[in-house]
Image (cartoon, rainbow, N blue to C red; front, side, top):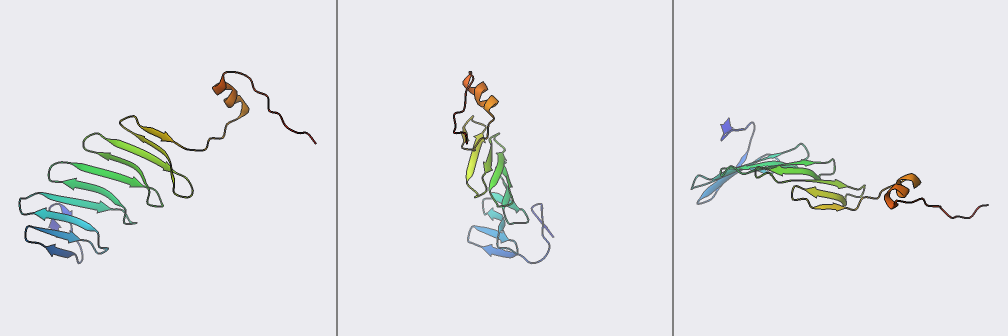
Length: 131
């Protein structure tokens, strides 16, 4: 069965309200709603139940990409906005960049002496004890 462009196979929960109805997939995720004024929205999820796409009757859409831990690593929308993120091993965001030019970079960087000298613009000498 197809409902508003969504292929439905199996059993779905449909919830009716006075002015709208909603459809949920077998995992309890809302996949569609429609209001009595004709506006609607639909969602898609990946195999790990992460929301990866939303589209509304007003033409707006947004899509997400998630890493293996469910963190959003990229998203973009129909208005041209995008953002990307990186996460450390503990799941904390270590890098963020968006289409407005905002950048937050908290990544730990490993540099060689030559790379440090290039950044500083002069030669350095590392002091240390010798045994």
